[in-house]
Image 1 (cartoon, rainbow, N blue to C red):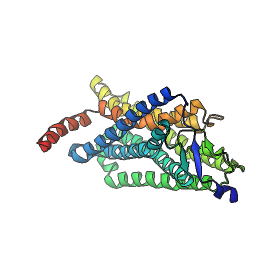
Image 2: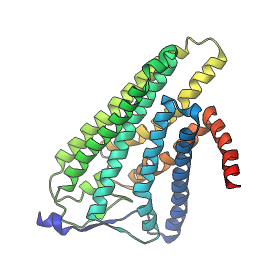
Image 3: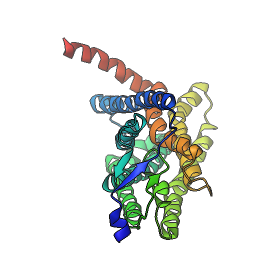
Image 4: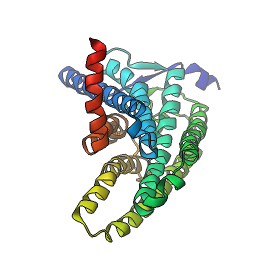
Amino acid sequence: MQNQTAVTEFILLGFSSNPVLRVSLFVLFSVLCSATLMGNALVFVLICLDYRLHSPMYFFLCHLSIVDICYASNNVPHMLGNLLGQGRTISFAGCGTQIHLYLIFALTECVLLAAMSYDRYVAICHPLRYFLIMNWRLCLTLTAVSWAFGFMFGTLQASLALRLPFCGPCNVDHFFCEILAVLKLACTDTTVNKVLIFAVCVCFLLFPLVLILISYLHILATVLHIQSVAGWHKTLSTCGSHLIVVGLFYGNAIFMYMVPGSGNASGREKVLSLFYSVINPSLNPLIYTLRNKQVKEAFKKLIPRCHLSSL
């Protein structure tokens, strides 16, 4: 306990020490952070203001936007300060907060994406019963379960990690307090923590991914019975956006946390972390809006309204 309480801060090593590269990365990540915040905030506002978007699919998309905004707000500001040579250190409490919030949002998104795939399954395979099955009570339940599971298991993992004794040196070889990078600094056996992380990954990555694949196999079987080309295009366009997001998120997360020897926060692992914590949240609004006619129409309606209000 003396060793643990003696550790009052960690040092985030971040990226390269090359000043030119650091400035370039600062500009790049500033743009991505701005795109994440503005894009997801715009999606959230459009869904709230346009009554045509008040459906289960957009209800889940609204919560996905909230999760992405939280991602960017949790990790990116400190990372930008690190790139400018300001704030490489982070307090023990601040590091614990980063770990805790990051796990909550990541686990919540895992369940949320599975709920969205079920919504697409019902919409395509049982269109006549869609609003009967995907009623608001079920939507609220699925969303509440996503946030509740994310909070419970994220809190469990973070609390177990932060109870470990840290003896120093407290150099975290990452650009934020990623749990695997922090566990490497513990001066005790972390087998229990790593087993728990793997078990949570099975529950929150593999199990939801299996459910998503089953949903899309049923969707594919239904699509094959559609005779018209227009029907094919309409059906696949509603699922394409979700499949892209699922592939980017689950692919990077599984490789990072479930492939043996891949969680040591080397340059490759930092890049993977960037994908599912910085790049993916900035791409999600583009993926959904560029491929979604209703969202684009809602945006076109919002522009004249904003112009009139400014006058």
